[in-house]
Amino acid sequence: MKQASRFSVCLCFLFYAHLALALDEIEVVTLNQYLGADLAPVLAAEPEAFNDALVGVLQKVSASDFKARVLEQARMIAKRSPEIIGLQEVWDLTCIDLDPRPEFGCDDPSIANAFVDHLDLTLAALNNTPEVRRKKGISYEVAATVKNLDLDKVTVPGLPFSGIPFCIKCLNAMPNAILVAVDRDVILARRDVQVAKVDWSAYESFGLCTKPSVDGCNYQVVAAVDSLGIAIERGFVAVDATIGNKVYRIVNTHFEVKGEDVGMPEFTFYQAAQADELLETIEKTTSTDYLIVLGDMNSSPEQTDIPGVFPPPFVTGITTPYHQFVDSGYHDVWELRPGKASGYTCCQNEDLDSKKSLLTERIDMIFTREMPKKVKQARVLGDKVTTKTNPPGLGLGLWSTDHGGIAAKIQF
Image (cartoon, rainbow, N blue to C red; front, side):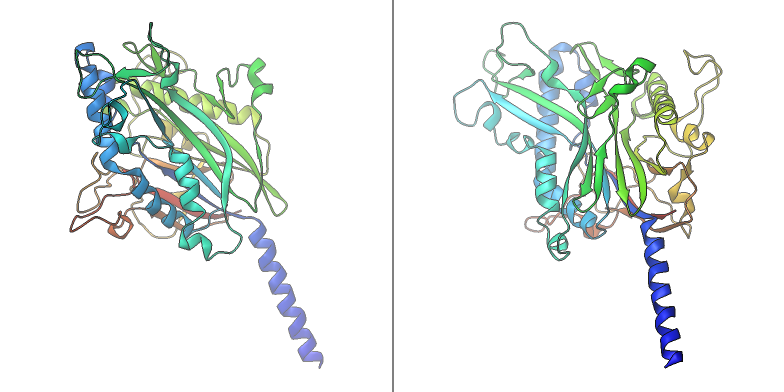
């Protein structure tokens, strides 16, 4: 009896020891959902070519079929059941018809599939996939949002709507539709996790978050499209998640693309300035137990710093976003996982139709401020052909996004 009693005590001790460890563990996912087309042709178009460029992008977005892609994104995320999901490029595209004729303007079959709200479809897919339904009680909700590029801010004299006027099957080059597009970064939380949005309003007087946007902040240094009179806003958003007796601050962001990707060196300055602003903001505002930064950094370990004299804060040269985080003492979670997997997350081709994965660069990141005790099950999501959409007929299907997502279980 005494031996049995000691054995029971031992089992109880092991159980509660395991439970205590689990309370210092969190699983997170970061994923760029992808609009479905490269915006560069629109942003670079001369006025006389702008309409054709915009219609071309909308046709590609429509063909990329987000309604099908989001089902695959949801399945691969739901298999992990993370507590927190950081999403980038969570677009909402709306078309306002100016033409009453059927199949003209917004109803044209070549563009009609473009006009969807990524967030609504993502929540529906996540909370209704078989993988989620098998996990009783697990579902997701929006925890915090930051609004970035917003075409609703564009106004055209003489038109009753805000947005970008365009025409398809044009008659006398008159617009027959209005495009309203909003890009967001969103944090989703499992409903069984206690989360609170970070209130940035108290910090504006200290020069932080001077451009509040919904629940987050837009960066002070951004690129602009002079022809449209708008800024290509980027931003960040954060929540405090309580798991067990620990509080985790999770930040989600999407930096500007690097200069070499668009042939414009100044874009590397933009993204580096955004990283500098985020790091300063975190340093001056975060005192939680643990801090985790998720996002599409558009910056890899291999991206090189640029020597020279630039505007502040880079008067002695530009330090790229990845190197800024590492130099500031942050830990790249992928580098802490066992094994030597590449972790490539970028990028499939624009049309998402390649037979094999084309990911050759690691730009989607999970950083932690505190050194984890262990990183478990760190994986790239969406880099296998089994995660492509189910094609009609004998087609090859599409990749669910042009990025690979990153998932990791982090133990502190």
